[in-house]
Image (cartoon, rainbow, N blue to C red):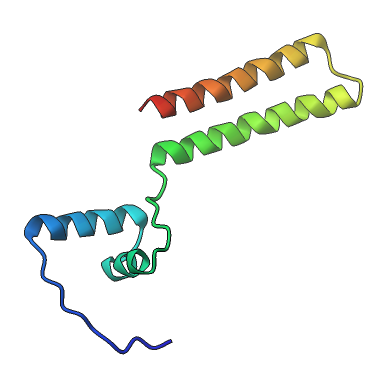
Length: 102
């Protein structure tokens, strides 16, 4: 749909900086950010680099846990494998706890 209307909006310096910072945090242009607010569409900040790294780490740990589960289901796992799986799960919880504290 073609946009037909233009609105001029006057802002203070602080308001302008807040708008620019908020839009940047969401990975949107100022116009797209304001349009989403106007339409009551959810506006979320992009995940930080730290969160992206946490997701990657949890993904790797999850893969290891899945490999252990497959070996248990195949009947070839040892007690050490199960202990390793629990250790890895503890690591996931610890990583999530560290991020939640911030």
